[in-house]
Image 1 (cartoon, helix red, strand yellow):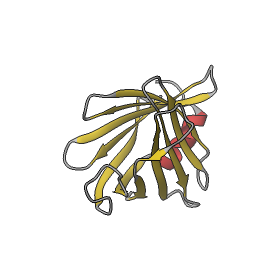
Image 2: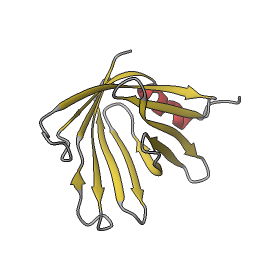
Image 3: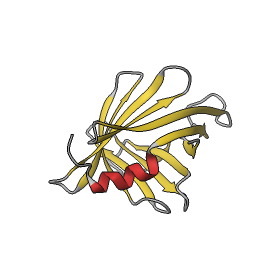
Image 4: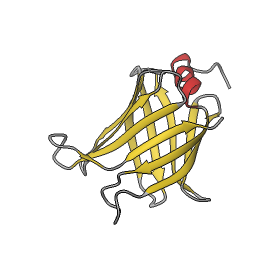
Length: 150
């Protein structure tokens, strides 16, 4: 494969590796105070994509492919989960000490994942949100924390 995209390399510099994932405060759980731990791995795929696999058990719960549209000067993310749902997100990532934001504005409903990357890049605090009124009001789905393992 050819040269890696420099903008995507800056995302990889933070995300590539193994992560402990902790989900809390899920509004849809019987007991929202429950804590569920899992893991995520992020690796290069053919030098043009990053692939993130999320696990809450032995089988991936979700797979994301992150890349970039050079013509649009924008990052994109494709997600697939255990239910068979496929979605496309626009993504911004400002790096260490910055923000990670994924957004989708589709006819069924809007979604976003709002994340803050720690100053050392070893922790990312996120919360996925949903809106069923085209972004006028948002409901936080849960809190999701990534802590680097390696």
